Amino acid sequence: MTEESGITNEWLETILRVHLRFSKKEEEDCLGPLDNNGSPDEEKDDLTVKVINFHISLGCREGENLLSDLYAIDVHFSVNEKEKQETKSLNLMIKLLPQDPYCRRFVCEGGFDIREIHFYTTLAPVLTNFAKKKIPDFQLPVPKCYYAKYQSGSESVLVLDNLNTLDFGMADFGKGLSLEQAISAVKAIAKIHGTAIAYKHVEDIDFISAFPFLFRPDAAAVSYEELIDRGLPALSCFLRETEVPNHEEVIIRLERLQSSARDILTELLAPDTRIATITHTDFWSNNIFFREDCDDSLILDWQMVTYSRPSNDLALLFLTSLDSTIRRNHKNDLVEIYWRYLTKTTSSLGFDLETSLNYAKDDFLEELKKSELLGLLLGIGSVDLALGDSRTESRLLDALNDLCKENVF
Image (cartoon, rainbow, N blue to C red; front, side, top):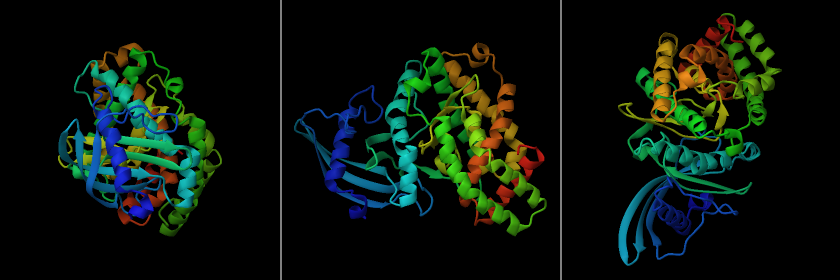
């Protein structure tokens, strides 16, 4: 596996050396600046790192992550600096470009890898440093970044904490999120949305010009349309085979959507809201890791980070990841919790969202209704994840019927 992935002692020593250098800088939360060749700036010093041993294994099950190849690495190493020596261990998750030709082309053409690298090395540190001015112990609910490197089309490396070794775990997608997990998830995304909103208005930031790597609505629409074109035939076939009531009407409405999908995506991904903010745009259960008690959750896989409507993230989570009963009975409760934590976050960072923007929870609920159509389209693009498991197929049918009855599509 080391030959296939290119992971060797020397490769790991380079990563660890860079991480240890930049971890000394209090203002940096991950690797720090990149030079023009995509390699971290290095300072000449007396720091030496020697890998004693490491163990590598696949970081996920086959088919779980199509946008990258994941490797879990447990590394034991020694550090020698200024005649002081100590041994350390780290549990890392390494993301590389996918080897599958179709997935690799899709990732490179869409810039998904470099977008995520920029999130961890540029945007996340900026937001964290801004928030720490008010809250010294502030942390974004995302994994720690140790290292990143990018060379267009040939190399993409992102090294993060292996959350599986830190008492975090992924929810059972087949079962769907419990109410406790859903609450934890909306609190986490509210913290990120709120931090970005406060940063934008307190510092008077234009996100589009300040962070040009963010997924543009027109470019995102093209990428998502390709996925929808692949997913819709499979969904239509599934609906015909199941022969559920009104399935022909649902199929007709879905196929009618296909011709206008790009325009709909572009419109709904545009930051056309007073509370435009940083959005994950792929916010579903497999991209959230939870502690067992659900008191804490971290959000990962930021390849699709966008400046858009925050309601888009909640719509996708509700439609794809919640048990039907929880979605139907507790959606408004979850929105209430989200709104409370969003406004609490902005207020703690010096920005009164509701007063300054003349925007209330009822405005958010109206935007959430619009975002449900985006959630449906994004769900169609990844429908293969739901097919083949009776539990997720049942949730899918429930969501389609509910949205059809509500004339969302």
